[in-house]
Image (cartoon, rainbow, N blue to C red; front, side, top):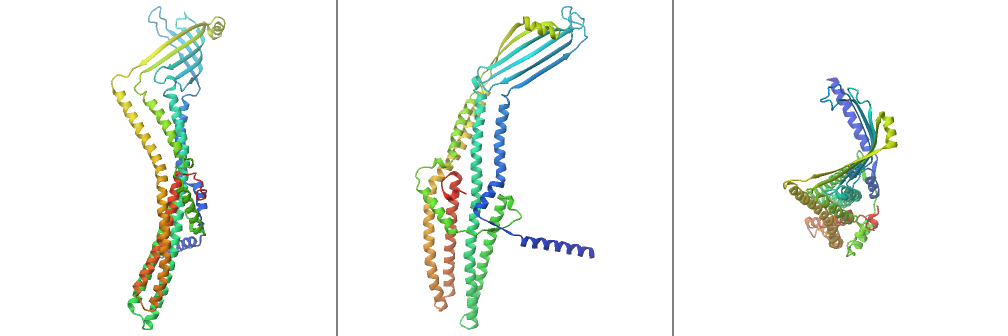
Length: 488
């Protein structure tokens, strides 16, 4: 029992120490610039982007491997003491064959190889002793139809090179989008902080009004219902603050999920100049809204579309050969010398080498209609995949530029209306508060005016946040738009 109590005490002290250390940990105050730097340095998405890039480069490398020069060597040894089938068909043994050379395949449908060889043979009965052929051999094959002049092979290389370029452009866009999403979280935290500040001010006002109501009750000029109403309002506004604290913790958690380097950190916001930031955003939105034409120079998505179109044309050429006839021409030229042993046969090659050649033609024709059916399916698949990717990119470009103008105008009008509303409500609230102190209006009238002003101020904060988010979404497509807000 004593041991159990001792263990509980140790665990309790440990938890208390951890909690104390956590409470005393220095707060990491974040600003927008610092978050963007972290997003560039340690973003988990960077690993995904790099993996996608390496995948395409790996595929391109594997295809290029087919066309690299290769050293080819072959050696055979055979021996037999078996009886010959006939007097004129001797049993050979031992035999030695050695061939060394290089081969080079081309993406244009050709393969060329050069080999030096020696072939030495003896018979089991000794009638032939180390008869040796030594020579040089050149082999070549050429595709005469399906891969004629690189119709498939070279086009595959070009397509993978295009895909590699698309991947590089997409990597830049993805990284930029990640940074912008982190910035959106930051501005959501700023909006949360502003909402908390407004709510805190309203709560402090409620506490003062509750104190005044209790004083009036003690002086017999108020009633218990008024006090209860203010107590309920204090509790409700305290609950609103708690809700904002909860939302803030959710935003910090999302930020830590995006940037693992922030784990185990106590986070806070560095001082910020909200008016300056909002003015910068509004100036940028005015610049964007004034552009009637799509700013193609500010986006790389249109380049991706052009590369996609080139890739699709190449893939169409490749797919169109699926059911084609396969025709290959092969040719071989050989010069050799023959004598007893490698040394003498080499001399014979040099002094009296004799040439020989061979030519062959391979034809393969698919029978039945399955190849044609498969070709049609592949063509439809290529087309649908291309259209889906193209429409997605063009849709992002067109929708962002076409919609941002009306959206920004509506949001700016909303900000102006909210500011006018807040100003008028503040004036009205001062009058209402004076009337309430003079017992000319009921407590509910004052509370309604306070809530109306509170909702107007919160609406103003949320509209400004919507403007910032809309602009950052625009930058996810037009990543290079020349705007100060986009230069982080």
